[in-house]
Image 1 (cartoon, helix red, strand yellow):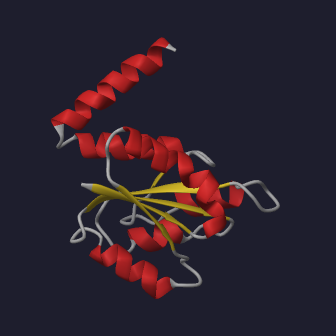
Image 2 (cartoon, rainbow, N blue to C red; image 1 turned 90 degrees about the vertical axis):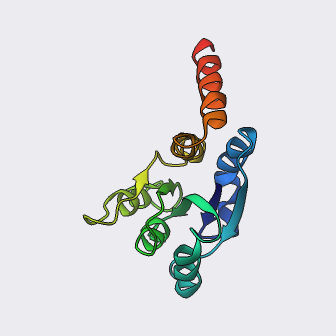
Image 3 (cartoon, rainbow, N blue to C red; image 1 turned 60 degrees about the vertical axis):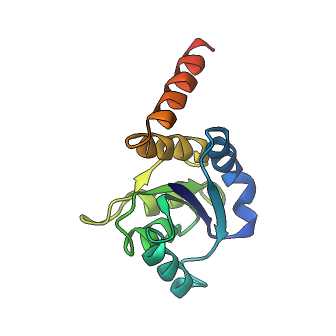
Length: 149
């Protein structure tokens, strides 16, 4: 299974890079996409609706300020969606955190900390490892090494 990393703007790439790097370190195929829930809503909806058939198992969405990307995606797919609220704006990402975490019943978005894209990737790996013993073993080795540090 592949993981898609979506971001609302190309300017978000540095904050989402830890997700891509973490996924790649586990050997997970990852693709990056820039699409906006506000500027390109039809593109977002089509991507989300076709993601399962395209071989994705998890979608990670990073966005700041109004941060509707994760919710817009979750409303169009039954795949797990992980939201990464991104810092910026007048209140440092608190607005993005609230917009990402406050989803209505029936449209869940797993949400990590502001700028927590590395943890989003680790959560995606945990989800994929449910059905992939090799990935589960790599995750266990990573966790054991991390705990030593």
